[in-house]
Length: 262
Image 1 (cartoon, rainbow, N blue to C red):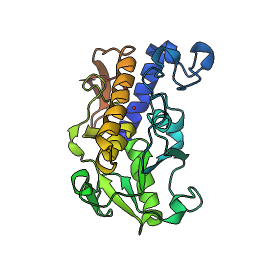
Image 2: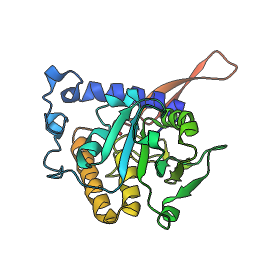
Image 3: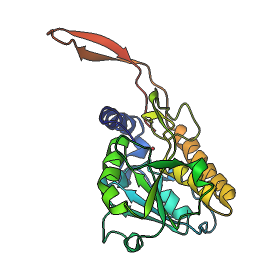
């Protein structure tokens, strides 16, 4: 999940990856796709998927932004294959008629950090001491789009869903696949995690056998990152032209060019 500038940077990074990783081209004729895990064959995850979807008492609903549905590094498709009670719904906001389950206003939580003027949020530590919810809602999108999705969904969620935050620090730059074995894409802030990790950490708190479920999902994410990292390489810094404010001339500023990896 990202700021508008980070969203643009990640779009540029996507172009860089497509240029460097020809085997990961979105054209199916140039890369075989595994029919089971729907991943490109070189990074097939079938060997790491559970033999049977993991059962949970919690129903998991992921609102999947339309722009993310075709993203080659989205963790939502793998998450729904791993959990028997996980469903992805494509859309930009939650509303009546989108999910029969949510239309019943069940006791629910949704994952997103607090923002100015937002509904109050509780932490995972506080959630541990409360009655487990029936439904867990996550938003899969860039930071910018997820913020818009949550804001647009809050009127619908009001009254039956509690916001839960996995703490992020917007004053700290986010990591990349070269910094962590659990990061797939360049993150905008410190503490940002993939949808799979966010759901795994939350299930670790609210499910009776939560720690085991969390370990299995995090292990799968770790393997996904490991496979992806084998097709990425650091690049040298490259110059970026920056226009001086109030002047016509431009100066060259060397910035690190980081490859995006979720």
